[in-house]
Amino acid sequence: MYAYVRYRIGNAAAEEIVADTYVAAWRRLDRLTDPLLSWLLGTARKLVGNELRRQRRSGELRRRLAAERKPPLGEPPVDDQLRIAIDSLRPHDQDVLIMTYWYDLEPGQAAAALGCSPVAYRVRLHRARERLRAVLERRDRQGER
Image 1 (cartoon, helix red, strand yellow):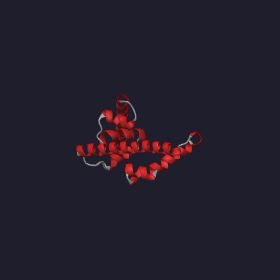
Image 2 (cartoon, rainbow, N blue to C red):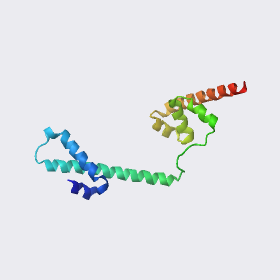
Image 3 (cartoon, rainbow, N blue to C red):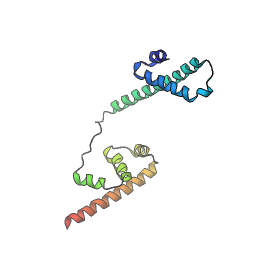
Image 4 (spheres, helix red, strand yellow):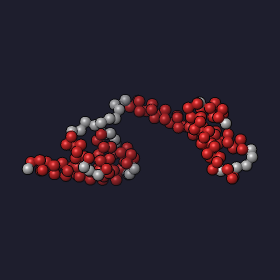
């Protein structure tokens, strides 16, 4: 079993795939019939196929990201007062502001990242902006006293 998987995919993922194959067999032990080896090899073959597809998609994603040539995401340039104001918001509001301004996502991309529709995203963004504006105005009024 291990030799077959290692031949198909190499050493890196072979142990994990063989272990997953045996876990699947253990879960179906009462339903398995002879010849067991053919079932094990068939299951391992499917898991190898899944791993190869995952590796291919991962490579494609890395190539697409490299082609965009954007600088890596890091800490956004935010002054302390704005950071404090944003930190005072609910996580829900923080997320929509971060996706929009720090990561510069388009509305459709931000909506997908937040798990909502583009319309719901726009509503959430509007409300988060209003809450942030209120926090900043309140801090300004308190600072003037």
